[in-house]
Image (tube, rainbow, N blue to C red):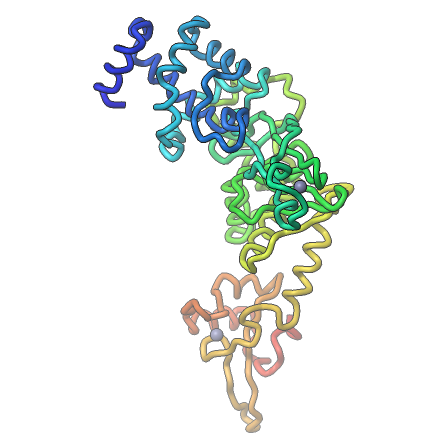
Length: 383
Ligand SMILES: [Zn+2]
Ligand SMILES: [Zn+2]
Protein backbone atom coordinates (compact mmCIF):
# COMPACT_ATOMS: atom_id res chain seq x y z
CA UNK A 1 0.00 0.00 0.00
CA UNK A 2 1.33 3.41 -0.94
CA UNK A 3 1.89 5.81 1.92
CA UNK A 4 -0.30 8.38 0.16
CA UNK A 5 -3.14 5.82 0.04
CA UNK A 6 -2.73 5.18 3.74
CA UNK A 7 -2.77 8.93 4.51
CA UNK A 8 -5.94 9.35 2.43
CA UNK A 9 -7.66 6.53 4.32
CA UNK A 10 -6.68 7.97 7.70
CA UNK A 11 -7.98 11.37 6.54
CA UNK A 12 -11.42 9.91 5.86
CA UNK A 13 -11.41 7.55 8.88
CA UNK A 14 -9.41 9.27 11.67
CA UNK A 15 -10.34 6.50 14.16
CA UNK A 16 -7.81 4.26 12.41
CA UNK A 17 -4.97 6.65 13.30
CA UNK A 18 -5.02 5.11 16.80
CA UNK A 19 -3.94 1.75 15.36
CA UNK A 20 -0.37 0.65 14.77
CA UNK A 21 0.74 0.38 11.15
CA UNK A 22 1.39 -3.32 11.73
CA UNK A 23 -2.20 -3.79 12.92
CA UNK A 24 -3.55 -2.35 9.68
CA UNK A 25 -1.16 -4.44 7.66
CA UNK A 26 -2.22 -7.57 9.54
CA UNK A 27 -5.91 -6.73 9.14
CA UNK A 28 -5.49 -6.41 5.39
CA UNK A 29 -3.51 -9.65 5.15
CA UNK A 30 -5.99 -11.75 7.16
CA UNK A 31 -9.01 -10.22 5.43
CA UNK A 32 -7.51 -11.13 2.05
CA UNK A 33 -7.26 -14.73 3.21
CA UNK A 34 -11.01 -14.57 3.89
CA UNK A 35 -12.04 -13.41 0.43
CA UNK A 36 -13.24 -16.81 -0.76
CA UNK A 37 -15.36 -17.23 2.37
CA UNK A 38 -16.77 -13.72 1.94
CA UNK A 39 -17.53 -14.26 -1.74
CA UNK A 40 -19.56 -17.35 -0.94
CA UNK A 41 -21.64 -15.50 1.61
CA UNK A 42 -23.04 -13.06 -0.94
CA UNK A 43 -24.89 -13.50 -4.28
CA UNK A 44 -22.70 -15.10 -6.95
CA UNK A 45 -23.07 -12.22 -9.42
CA UNK A 46 -21.59 -9.64 -7.03
CA UNK A 47 -17.93 -8.88 -7.59
CA UNK A 48 -17.67 -6.11 -5.03
CA UNK A 49 -16.80 -6.55 -1.33
CA UNK A 50 -19.73 -6.97 1.06
CA UNK A 51 -20.88 -3.76 2.74
CA UNK A 52 -20.77 -5.42 6.15
CA UNK A 53 -18.87 -8.45 7.37
CA UNK A 54 -20.89 -11.59 8.16
CA UNK A 55 -21.14 -12.22 11.90
CA UNK A 56 -18.79 -15.23 11.99
CA UNK A 57 -16.05 -13.42 10.06
CA UNK A 58 -16.52 -10.23 12.09
CA UNK A 59 -16.05 -12.23 15.32
CA UNK A 60 -13.08 -14.09 13.89
CA UNK A 61 -11.28 -10.86 12.96
CA UNK A 62 -12.09 -9.40 16.35
CA UNK A 63 -10.43 -12.36 18.06
CA UNK A 64 -7.41 -12.21 15.76
CA UNK A 65 -6.89 -8.46 16.06
CA UNK A 66 -8.24 -7.64 19.52
CA UNK A 67 -10.13 -4.69 18.08
CA UNK A 68 -13.34 -3.18 19.38
CA UNK A 69 -16.56 -3.89 17.56
CA UNK A 70 -16.80 -0.32 16.24
CA UNK A 71 -13.15 -0.05 15.20
CA UNK A 72 -13.40 -3.29 13.25
CA UNK A 73 -16.47 -2.04 11.36
CA UNK A 74 -14.64 1.17 10.47
CA UNK A 75 -11.53 -0.74 9.42
CA UNK A 76 -13.58 -2.88 7.05
CA UNK A 77 -15.40 0.14 5.64
CA UNK A 78 -12.10 1.95 5.08
CA UNK A 79 -10.05 -0.93 3.68
CA UNK A 80 -12.53 -3.26 1.97
CA UNK A 81 -11.88 -1.95 -1.55
CA UNK A 82 -8.14 -2.20 -1.10
CA UNK A 83 -8.52 -5.72 0.29
CA UNK A 84 -10.83 -6.81 -2.51
CA UNK A 85 -9.13 -5.37 -5.54
CA UNK A 86 -5.56 -6.53 -5.13
CA UNK A 87 -5.03 -10.24 -5.73
CA UNK A 88 -1.94 -11.24 -3.79
CA UNK A 89 -2.74 -14.91 -3.43
CA UNK A 90 0.49 -15.96 -5.16
CA UNK A 91 2.61 -13.84 -2.84
CA UNK A 92 0.98 -14.92 0.36
CA UNK A 93 2.23 -18.44 0.90
CA UNK A 94 4.57 -17.43 3.71
CA UNK A 95 1.97 -15.04 5.14
CA UNK A 96 -0.62 -17.80 5.04
CA UNK A 97 1.58 -20.06 7.15
CA UNK A 98 2.10 -17.21 9.59
CA UNK A 99 -1.65 -16.78 10.13
CA UNK A 100 -2.53 -20.48 10.18
CA UNK A 101 -2.48 -20.68 14.02
CA UNK A 102 -5.10 -17.92 14.18
CA UNK A 103 -7.39 -19.81 11.82
CA UNK A 104 -7.02 -22.98 13.87
CA UNK A 105 -7.55 -21.23 17.19
CA UNK A 106 -10.37 -18.84 16.29
CA UNK A 107 -11.70 -19.95 12.91
CA UNK A 108 -12.71 -23.60 13.27
CA UNK A 109 -15.33 -22.88 15.92
CA UNK A 110 -16.87 -20.32 13.52
CA UNK A 111 -16.97 -22.61 10.48
CA UNK A 112 -14.00 -20.77 8.95
CA UNK A 113 -11.21 -22.94 7.60
CA UNK A 114 -7.71 -21.94 6.67
CA UNK A 115 -8.05 -23.58 3.25
CA UNK A 116 -11.42 -22.58 1.77
CA UNK A 117 -12.88 -25.59 -0.04
CA UNK A 118 -15.96 -24.65 -2.08
CA UNK A 119 -17.36 -25.86 -5.41
CA UNK A 120 -15.63 -24.00 -8.26
CA UNK A 121 -19.02 -22.97 -9.68
CA UNK A 122 -22.14 -21.23 -8.36
CA UNK A 123 -24.62 -22.30 -11.07
CA UNK A 124 -25.74 -25.78 -12.10
CA UNK A 125 -23.73 -27.50 -14.82
CA UNK A 126 -26.28 -30.27 -15.31
CA UNK A 127 -29.20 -27.88 -15.85
CA UNK A 128 -27.12 -25.78 -18.20
CA UNK A 129 -26.07 -28.90 -20.09
CA UNK A 130 -29.59 -30.22 -20.51
CA UNK A 131 -31.20 -26.79 -20.76
CA UNK A 132 -34.07 -27.86 -18.55
CA UNK A 133 -34.79 -24.60 -16.81
CA UNK A 134 -34.57 -20.85 -16.83
CA UNK A 135 -31.38 -19.08 -15.79
CA UNK A 136 -32.65 -18.34 -12.31
CA UNK A 137 -33.00 -22.05 -11.61
CA UNK A 138 -29.32 -22.62 -12.31
CA UNK A 139 -28.21 -20.88 -9.13
CA UNK A 140 -26.96 -23.30 -6.50
CA UNK A 141 -27.95 -23.08 -2.87
CA UNK A 142 -28.66 -25.13 0.25
CA UNK A 143 -25.03 -25.04 1.30
CA UNK A 144 -23.70 -27.68 3.64
CA UNK A 145 -20.36 -27.95 5.36
CA UNK A 146 -18.56 -30.92 6.85
CA UNK A 147 -15.44 -31.13 9.02
CA UNK A 148 -12.41 -32.60 7.29
CA UNK A 149 -8.68 -33.02 7.57
CA UNK A 150 -6.63 -31.75 4.64
CA UNK A 151 -3.19 -33.29 4.15
CA UNK A 152 -0.99 -30.53 2.77
CA UNK A 153 2.60 -30.52 1.62
CA UNK A 154 3.53 -27.17 3.13
CA UNK A 155 1.75 -27.18 6.49
CA UNK A 156 1.11 -30.84 7.27
CA UNK A 157 -2.43 -31.96 8.15
CA UNK A 158 -4.86 -29.10 8.68
CA UNK A 159 -8.34 -29.37 10.17
CA UNK A 160 -10.96 -27.52 8.17
CA UNK A 161 -14.31 -27.70 6.41
CA UNK A 162 -15.55 -28.67 3.00
CA UNK A 163 -18.57 -26.85 1.58
CA UNK A 164 -21.07 -28.12 -0.97
CA UNK A 165 -23.95 -26.54 -2.90
CA UNK A 166 -27.14 -28.05 -4.26
CA UNK A 167 -29.37 -27.69 -7.31
CA UNK A 168 -32.96 -28.26 -6.29
CA UNK A 169 -34.04 -28.48 -9.92
CA UNK A 170 -32.00 -31.56 -10.88
CA UNK A 171 -30.95 -32.77 -7.41
CA UNK A 172 -27.26 -32.44 -8.13
CA UNK A 173 -24.90 -31.65 -5.25
CA UNK A 174 -21.65 -29.88 -6.02
CA UNK A 175 -18.54 -30.52 -3.94
CA UNK A 176 -15.10 -28.88 -4.25
CA UNK A 177 -13.69 -31.50 -6.65
CA UNK A 178 -16.74 -33.31 -8.09
CA UNK A 179 -20.52 -33.20 -8.35
CA UNK A 180 -22.99 -35.97 -7.56
CA UNK A 181 -25.78 -36.65 -10.03
CA UNK A 182 -28.00 -39.39 -11.53
CA UNK A 183 -29.98 -39.84 -8.31
CA UNK A 184 -26.80 -39.70 -6.23
CA UNK A 185 -25.36 -42.78 -7.92
CA UNK A 186 -22.49 -41.18 -9.92
CA UNK A 187 -19.91 -38.49 -9.30
CA UNK A 188 -18.11 -36.53 -12.00
CA UNK A 189 -14.89 -34.66 -11.37
CA UNK A 190 -14.57 -31.14 -12.72
CA UNK A 191 -12.45 -30.69 -15.79
CA UNK A 192 -10.61 -27.74 -14.31
CA UNK A 193 -7.35 -28.17 -12.47
CA UNK A 194 -8.14 -29.31 -8.97
CA UNK A 195 -5.96 -28.09 -6.12
CA UNK A 196 -7.36 -30.54 -3.55
CA UNK A 197 -8.79 -34.04 -3.89
CA UNK A 198 -11.09 -35.96 -1.61
CA UNK A 199 -9.42 -39.30 -0.90
CA UNK A 200 -11.83 -40.65 1.71
CA UNK A 201 -14.86 -39.50 3.65
CA UNK A 202 -13.72 -36.46 5.68
CA UNK A 203 -10.20 -36.49 4.21
CA UNK A 204 -8.70 -34.36 1.44
CA UNK A 205 -5.20 -34.07 0.05
CA UNK A 206 -3.26 -31.22 -1.50
CA UNK A 207 -2.65 -32.02 -5.19
CA UNK A 208 1.01 -31.00 -4.81
CA UNK A 209 1.39 -33.68 -2.17
CA UNK A 210 -0.33 -36.19 -4.47
CA UNK A 211 2.22 -35.34 -7.16
CA UNK A 212 5.05 -35.74 -4.66
CA UNK A 213 3.83 -39.23 -3.67
CA UNK A 214 3.53 -40.19 -7.33
CA UNK A 215 7.08 -39.01 -7.99
CA UNK A 216 8.40 -40.87 -4.94
CA UNK A 217 6.68 -44.09 -6.03
CA UNK A 218 7.65 -43.89 -9.70
CA UNK A 219 11.20 -42.60 -9.38
CA UNK A 220 12.35 -44.12 -6.11
CA UNK A 221 9.92 -47.06 -5.75
CA UNK A 222 8.88 -45.73 -2.37
CA UNK A 223 6.16 -47.98 -0.99
CA UNK A 224 2.82 -46.56 0.08
CA UNK A 225 3.72 -47.53 3.64
CA UNK A 226 6.90 -45.50 3.47
CA UNK A 227 5.17 -42.53 1.78
CA UNK A 228 2.79 -42.40 4.76
CA UNK A 229 5.64 -42.95 7.21
CA UNK A 230 7.77 -40.19 5.67
CA UNK A 231 4.82 -37.81 5.71
CA UNK A 232 3.88 -38.58 9.31
CA UNK A 233 7.42 -38.59 10.69
CA UNK A 234 9.06 -35.86 8.65
CA UNK A 235 6.64 -33.43 7.09
CA UNK A 236 4.37 -33.21 10.11
CA UNK A 237 7.19 -33.15 12.64
CA UNK A 238 8.90 -30.32 10.82
CA UNK A 239 5.71 -28.32 10.56
CA UNK A 240 5.45 -25.25 12.73
CA UNK A 241 1.75 -25.85 13.39
CA UNK A 242 2.08 -29.05 15.38
CA UNK A 243 1.67 -27.23 18.67
CA UNK A 244 -1.53 -25.46 17.67
CA UNK A 245 -3.40 -28.40 16.17
CA UNK A 246 -6.65 -28.89 18.08
CA UNK A 247 -6.16 -31.93 20.32
CA UNK A 248 -9.86 -32.75 20.29
CA UNK A 249 -10.33 -32.66 16.52
CA UNK A 250 -12.65 -35.50 15.62
CA UNK A 251 -10.76 -36.67 12.54
CA UNK A 252 -7.28 -38.12 12.52
CA UNK A 253 -4.31 -35.93 11.66
CA UNK A 254 -1.96 -38.68 10.51
CA UNK A 255 -1.83 -40.32 7.14
CA UNK A 256 -2.67 -43.98 6.64
CA UNK A 257 -1.36 -46.31 3.94
CA UNK A 258 -4.84 -46.45 2.41
CA UNK A 259 -4.74 -42.67 1.97
CA UNK A 260 -1.58 -42.94 -0.08
CA UNK A 261 -3.00 -45.64 -2.35
CA UNK A 262 -6.28 -43.77 -2.80
CA UNK A 263 -4.29 -40.66 -3.64
CA UNK A 264 -2.02 -42.41 -6.10
CA UNK A 265 -4.83 -44.06 -8.06
CA UNK A 266 -7.16 -41.06 -8.08
CA UNK A 267 -4.32 -38.79 -9.16
CA UNK A 268 -3.37 -41.24 -11.95
CA UNK A 269 -6.96 -41.55 -13.17
CA UNK A 270 -7.42 -37.79 -13.22
CA UNK A 271 -4.19 -37.27 -15.16
CA UNK A 272 -5.24 -39.97 -17.61
CA UNK A 273 -8.70 -38.50 -18.22
CA UNK A 274 -7.29 -34.97 -18.46
CA UNK A 275 -4.78 -36.19 -21.05
CA UNK A 276 -7.62 -37.63 -23.12
CA UNK A 277 -9.78 -34.50 -22.64
CA UNK A 278 -12.40 -36.50 -20.75
CA UNK A 279 -14.00 -36.11 -17.33
CA UNK A 280 -13.49 -38.76 -14.69
CA UNK A 281 -16.76 -40.32 -13.60
CA UNK A 282 -16.95 -42.78 -10.70
CA UNK A 283 -19.70 -44.52 -8.74
CA UNK A 284 -20.79 -42.36 -5.82
CA UNK A 285 -22.43 -45.09 -3.81
CA UNK A 286 -19.49 -47.33 -2.92
CA UNK A 287 -18.40 -49.18 0.19
CA UNK A 288 -14.97 -47.50 0.18
CA UNK A 289 -12.81 -45.25 -1.93
CA UNK A 290 -10.85 -48.28 -3.11
CA UNK A 291 -14.07 -49.95 -4.29
CA UNK A 292 -15.13 -46.71 -5.96
CA UNK A 293 -11.90 -46.54 -7.97
CA UNK A 294 -11.86 -50.19 -9.02
CA UNK A 295 -14.09 -49.94 -12.09
CA UNK A 296 -12.15 -46.99 -13.54
CA UNK A 297 -8.78 -48.64 -12.89
CA UNK A 298 -9.87 -51.82 -14.67
CA UNK A 299 -11.17 -49.82 -17.64
CA UNK A 300 -7.91 -47.94 -17.86
CA UNK A 301 -5.91 -51.18 -17.68
CA UNK A 302 -8.00 -52.65 -20.49
CA UNK A 303 -7.27 -49.62 -22.64
CA UNK A 304 -3.55 -49.86 -21.95
CA UNK A 305 -3.22 -53.59 -22.69
CA UNK A 306 -2.29 -54.87 -26.15
CA UNK A 307 -1.90 -51.97 -28.52
CA UNK A 308 -3.21 -49.36 -26.07
CA UNK A 309 0.15 -47.84 -25.26
CA UNK A 310 1.39 -45.02 -27.42
CA UNK A 311 4.67 -46.66 -28.48
CA UNK A 312 3.57 -50.28 -28.36
CA UNK A 313 5.18 -51.12 -31.74
CA UNK A 314 8.28 -49.00 -31.33
CA UNK A 315 11.63 -50.46 -32.38
CA UNK A 316 14.96 -48.83 -33.16
CA UNK A 317 18.65 -49.59 -33.15
CA UNK A 318 18.95 -48.70 -29.50
CA UNK A 319 16.35 -51.00 -28.05
CA UNK A 320 16.21 -53.72 -30.72
CA UNK A 321 19.28 -55.84 -31.53
CA UNK A 322 19.11 -57.77 -34.82
CA UNK A 323 21.82 -60.40 -35.37
CA UNK A 324 22.68 -63.67 -37.13
CA UNK A 325 24.07 -66.61 -35.16
CA UNK A 326 26.85 -69.02 -36.18
CA UNK A 327 24.34 -71.24 -38.00
CA UNK A 328 23.21 -68.31 -40.08
CA UNK A 329 19.87 -68.05 -38.34
CA UNK A 330 18.67 -64.47 -37.98
CA UNK A 331 17.34 -63.38 -34.63
CA UNK A 332 16.63 -60.32 -32.64
CA UNK A 333 16.42 -59.12 -29.10
CA UNK A 334 13.89 -56.53 -28.03
CA UNK A 335 13.91 -54.92 -24.64
CA UNK A 336 10.68 -54.63 -22.76
CA UNK A 337 9.64 -52.98 -19.57
CA UNK A 338 7.57 -55.14 -17.28
CA UNK A 339 8.00 -55.75 -13.59
CA UNK A 340 10.48 -57.42 -11.28
CA UNK A 341 13.87 -58.09 -12.86
CA UNK A 342 13.24 -55.65 -15.68
CA UNK A 343 13.42 -52.82 -13.15
CA UNK A 344 17.04 -52.74 -14.28
CA UNK A 345 15.87 -51.78 -17.76
CA UNK A 346 13.65 -49.12 -16.32
CA UNK A 347 16.72 -47.55 -14.74
CA UNK A 348 18.41 -47.48 -18.11
CA UNK A 349 15.23 -46.32 -19.83
CA UNK A 350 15.68 -48.58 -22.85
CA UNK A 351 12.47 -47.49 -24.57
CA UNK A 352 14.62 -45.02 -26.39
CA UNK A 353 11.96 -42.83 -27.88
CA UNK A 354 12.13 -39.97 -27.07
CA UNK A 355 15.03 -40.56 -24.66
CA UNK A 356 18.54 -41.16 -25.96
CA UNK A 357 19.69 -44.20 -24.06
CA UNK A 358 23.28 -45.35 -24.17
CA UNK A 359 23.10 -48.70 -25.96
CA UNK A 360 26.37 -49.81 -24.38
CA UNK A 361 24.80 -49.34 -20.96
CA UNK A 362 21.78 -51.32 -22.05
CA UNK A 363 23.93 -54.21 -23.26
CA UNK A 364 25.97 -54.10 -20.07
CA UNK A 365 22.79 -54.48 -18.05
CA UNK A 366 21.62 -57.31 -20.27
CA UNK A 367 24.96 -59.04 -19.84
CA UNK A 368 24.76 -58.78 -16.10
CA UNK A 369 21.42 -60.53 -16.23
CA UNK A 370 22.89 -63.21 -18.53
CA UNK A 371 20.37 -62.53 -21.21
CA UNK A 372 22.66 -62.12 -24.21
CA UNK A 373 23.39 -65.87 -24.74
CA UNK A 374 19.72 -66.43 -25.41
CA UNK A 375 19.33 -63.30 -27.41
CA UNK A 376 16.87 -64.65 -29.95
CA UNK A 377 14.42 -65.70 -27.27
CA UNK A 378 11.76 -63.13 -26.60
CA UNK A 379 12.73 -61.37 -23.43
CA UNK A 380 9.31 -61.77 -21.91
CA UNK A 381 9.74 -65.55 -22.06
CA UNK A 382 13.14 -65.29 -20.42
CA UNK A 383 11.63 -63.40 -17.56
ZN1 LIG B 1 -29.46 -28.47 -11.80
ZN1 LIG C 1 14.00 -47.72 -29.29
